[in-house]
Structures are given as C-alpha cells and as structure tokens.
Image (cartoon, rainbow over the protein chains, first blue to last red):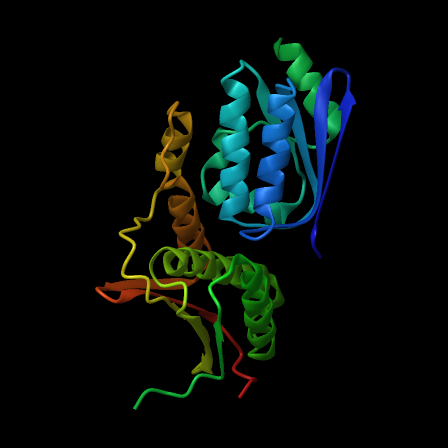
Length: 116
Length: 149
C-alpha cells in the first residue's frame, strides 16, 4: 500500500487526509504537501491519520516539521487518530505531549475553534 | 562458529527498499512463531533500523549494501541490521528529550535519528546497539515459538 494524500477546507481549517504507509520512502511527499499548504497561507491544519497503516520516525519528523512551520505563523497542526498501533508510536516517542490528538475531524476542529 | 541465519537480505541503500526489508522480516517473524500481537513491533523496529542504516550508507558508502540477518533460535527471533556507514554517533533520545527538542524554535537536525532510536528502544523486547569504526550493528530480538527452521 502506497501513500495517498488529499486535502479539503472545512470551517476555515485545512484537513489533510492521509491513507497508507508513511515511511522513509513516502514521507517526503507528505512533507511537500504540508510545505505547499503553509506557503499557500493555510496555517490551521488537521491531519487525519485514521487510514494510516504504517508510520515510522521519518513520518513523525515530517509531522513535527509541519507543526513548527505553522507555529511560525501562529498556526496549529492537530491530529486525528484512534488506532492503537499508531497512538502507541506517539506515546513511546513522547509526542503525545506535543500534538493535540483527537478522535474525529469534527472534534479536532471544534477544539481548535474553542481555543481561539 | 556462528549460527547460520534463517534468512539474510542485503539491499541497495535506497529508501524504497526499506519497505521490502520490513515485509520480509515480518514474514520470517510470523513463520518463527512470534506472537501476532508483536508483529507490528517487529515491522516498525526493523523499518527504523533499516532507515537508519540506509541514511548512513547514503552519506558514507552508497555503493555498499545494507545487510539484515533474521535468525530463529532457542525460542527467540533475532534481527541484526548491520551498516558500514562508519558509525553515526546517534544517541537514544528519551521521550522528554524529544518533546524539548520539538519545543526549540530552531529544532535539532538529529531529531529524526533520535526518534528512530527511541522507537527501536521502545519496541524491541531486547536491543543491543554496537558501534565500531566500521559501522553500527543493531541487534533486536523477540520471543518466538521456534517453529520456523
């Protein structure tokens, strides 16, 4: 399974849908998309990881890089994930303290709006 | 005399082949009787070790293959990933260290390496990282029913 990327705007927040495997080979494509979105002026991002089958440290690095980029514009990058195998990766690397992780895209958007 | 590996793979140091290495390692682990619940950990840890090795080779010796040996013996499934990248000086970063590195405005270029090693340390049941002037060898193992030979 390769990596599939898609994105759409919902309530003024850009939602990135990621499907498949994010690893050392495919992660550069996600990095490029995040950079492209930030360069286009999207600073409020939600990355939906519900269909991610595999995530490695390169993928984590790309998400962290994206977070830093949007933060430089006072933006945000929240995640949507309920899969235990993926959540475990965020836990063992301590990144649960770094990202807001939500159960659904709607919940992520509501939480972000409430914080404004 | 060292025991013969059950399966050995050597591959050109390109990111595209890391997935193949993960798939082979997972298949051999399954056949060796590693519990289904642990196969995800095997897949991830082997992927991390191979990504690390690929990067070391790309920097130092792109013409040399990365080697991975998978051995099923005495109730353990063992994986050894060996690179000839000259030793990386990577350090295992703790979860707190990673959170701190993320918070730094400039960030650390070593963060991804730190993440990879933190993942291996958190995933493998038993890990030994040995560094020599020639390169780094990462040995990891998991309990197995020993059905594979």
